[in-house]
Image (cartoon, rainbow, N blue to C red; front, side, top):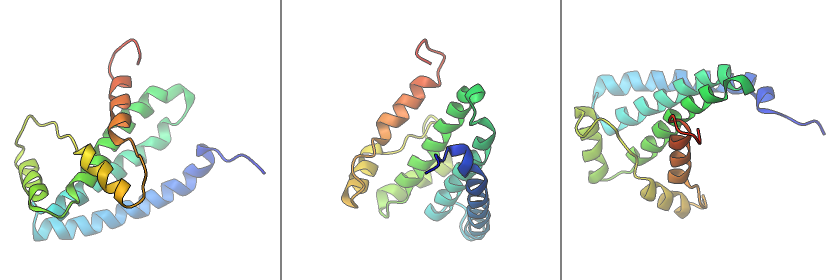
Length: 147
């Protein structure tokens, strides 16, 4: 059995990401036209951001560009986790989405990792360690000795 590497999968992954991005863009255009500040629009915009960041990963998945890959991984994870947070169907989430569109707060939006973890556990996802992984990437992408 041959070993398959990430680089072997990239050609297919790029095609999949391109198709998914095209569909997100099509649906986002409809959603943002109908209601530009809806919960659905927020989720689609975050999904587009995540897909866009993934598209940039292909060029930086080499040993020489490890730091670049890390710099892209962090905003991808932030978009992914915030997307998961914004998908909860309740009034509290809709208020957060509304505040997000208004640019309230300090401009840095952090997902509700505990709520996401609880949800993922409830559907059999086990321990995803979203916050731990986010923290590790944050530490590794700042100009510290560890990084």
